[in-house]
Image 1 (cartoon, rainbow, N blue to C red):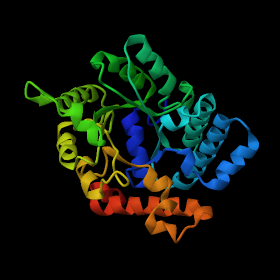
Image 2: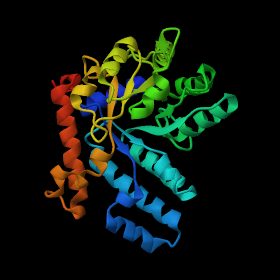
Image 3: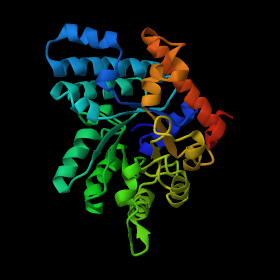
Amino acid sequence: MFLHFHYADRLHAAIRAKGTPALVGLDPRFEQLPAEMRERSAQRTTNRWECMALASEEFCRRIIDVVAPLVPAVKPQAAFFEECGPPGMAALGNVIHYARRQGLIVIADGKRGDIGSTALGYARAWLAGADPEAAPWGADALTINPYLGVDTLQPFLELAEERGAGVYVLVRTSNPGARDFQDRATHGQTLYERVAQTVEHLASESLGASGYGCVGAVVGATYPAELQKLRHEMESVPLLIPGYGSQGGTSADVAGGVDPEGLGALVNSSRGIIFAWEREEYRERFPPDRWEEAVLAATQAMIADLAEHTPAGQLRI
C-alpha cells in the first residue's frame, strides 16, 4: 500500500512539498516550438506526423526538466498530441510517464465522457492513479465531461477510488462561450450550479485524510465571483482552475478558489509558461536559444504571484 494512496492526499502532499498550487499545462503547439527542435525532428523522419510527435515529446520533456523542481503537477493537453496521429499518442504516453518519474502529479486533459462500458474503457485507459503502471496512459487524474449525466461519471469514479486516481468534472469553464449552456436556468438553478451540487455530493462520498474527495471540478479563473462562490459550495472538491495568465485571469481572480491553507486547488498556466520567451517581458532577456530560461523565469514569477496575492502564501510560512 502506498503511504499516500488517495488522490487528494497525494495531491496535497505534492502541493505542500513544492509550496505552491501552480500547475503547468503542456500544450505543444507545433508551429510555436523552437525552430531548432522542429528542424532536428525533421532530420530524423520524413513522416509529417512523426516529425510533429518527436518535436512535441522533446519539448515537453525539456519543459518538465525545468518545472519539476518547482511545481507539484503538470497537465498535458491530449488534443495537441492527437493531431499528430498514432505517433503523437505514443509521445503523449511517453511524456506522462516521464513526468511521473520526475515525481509530478499528472492530470491528463482529455475531457472524456460517455455511457456505460465506453466510459469504463476510457477510465481504464487513462486512470493509473497511485501506480503509474496501472493504466497504459499512466495519468494520476483525468478531466471528464458530465453532459451525458451522472451515470456516465460513475465508471470513472469507481475506478478512481480503486486506483487512487482523481477526476476533474467540467463545472464552470473559462471560455467566453461557457455562458451559452452553463448559465441556462431550470427550476431556478443554472446548469453549472446543478453540476457543482452533484460534484460536491460525489466528492463527499470519497473523502481522504485531507478532507477532500477524489472528485474534482474545473472552474475557470475568468469568472472570479463564481469561482469564490463555488469554492464555498464545493468544500470537499479539489479545483482545477484554468484561465490564469494568457486567458486574462489574475492571481486576485484565482484567490477565491484556494482554501485558507493554500490547498484545495491547482492553478493552471499553459502558454504563459511554456512559450514565455515570446512574451514581451521576456523577449529581450531570453533569445530563442535560451527559451528554457524564460520558462524558468515565468514559472518562478507565477509562483511568487500566487504566494503574494492568494492564500498559497500560507504554504511558505
